[in-house]
Structure formats: structure tokens, C-alpha cells
Length: 226
Image (tube, rainbow, N blue to C red):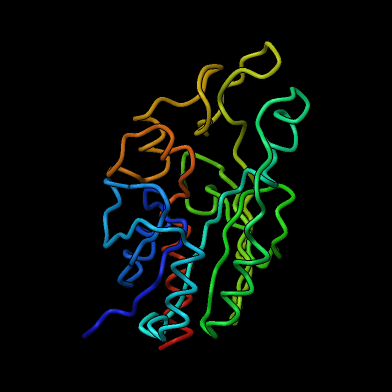
């Protein structure tokens, strides 16, 4: 039996991809950066350009659904908070409106994933590591296009994220899978906490979402399209 296909845009190293694979979908990834550790079929290209070409050629209909994790720097909490207050960083282009227009044009069910912040996405679904028994919290919001799913219970957190905050050290059941220093997680700790073992690149791990999130989403998509 042929597995349904999902297009993974802005794929990074494949955190989302692995979850969809585990749910039973065949994954094709696209990212503007070379991703040699991406575990599935991969094409290096600008995601919006590639999606436009797939729509124009009609090849988009080989897919059952589309997942997109566009760069979040324009609206993520770090960029609009700490970085802005310190005068760090640079201007970032907000891709989501153009991306949404293209995704709507496909007529396919789609998912746009973003972290907490001011990115212009609907919060149709919010997932947290505690819902899956993980060692990270890593809240993520998902806009769902052309389909819907009930929000699962957001379980109460069991404690704090381990690390230093304002000169004080806090212990807790979750690791900080971002940045360096200040008690942030080591690469092996991030891998274990998120369930990712195919990359050991810190940047890729800090950007990744745990595969458990998209495994759950993929299961809901498959029920929808069955």
C-alpha cells in the first residue's frame, strides 16, 4: 500500500518530518539551506518558489497535505524581546502571509508551525512537551488550513525548566533546548529530551520541534483523509 505523501517546507533538519514519518506518511523536505542530516527525500530550494512551481505544474497534487515551519525570527519572543531590548539582531522578513496565500491555493490540508510570539498565525492547536512526556516544554502553535482537530488537554507542568535565571539556579524536570551557557542543555540532553538522534548539530536541535508533536498531528491527518 502506498503511503500518503506530505510536503515539508522550511524543513530544517527534520524534527517535524520524523513525526509525520512515524505516523505513516512519506515525507519530502525542502529547505533553502543544505541539510545533509535530513532523514528523508530532500531538495535544497527556496520553499516559496518551490511551492509556486509545484502549484503551477500541478505536481502539488501528489501530496496529501503540507507542513510549513517558516523562519520565526520576525515574530518570535526572543527577537521581539531580549534581542530588541539589547539592540541585537537584524530585520527579518515575515513570510507567513505569502505562504498562507500559496497554501490556500493548493486546496490541500496544511499546517503552519510557529513558536509563541507575535507571528501572524492562528493558534488552532497548541502543543507542549508535557503532553507527550518529554524532557522539554517547547510550546508550539499550529495554524490548520482546510481541516481542523480538537485541542488536546494542556497538562500542568511538573516544575521549572532547569537553568540559571537572573543569577539564581533552578532545578526542574525540563531542559532548556536553546542557546548556550546558563545551564542550557548539552547536545546529548537535547537529543534525549526531544527524541532526536539523527543530528548532533546544536543549531538544528535548538530549532527543531519534537517529532512526537507531528506524529500526533499526522495521525489526525490520516484519519481525516482515510
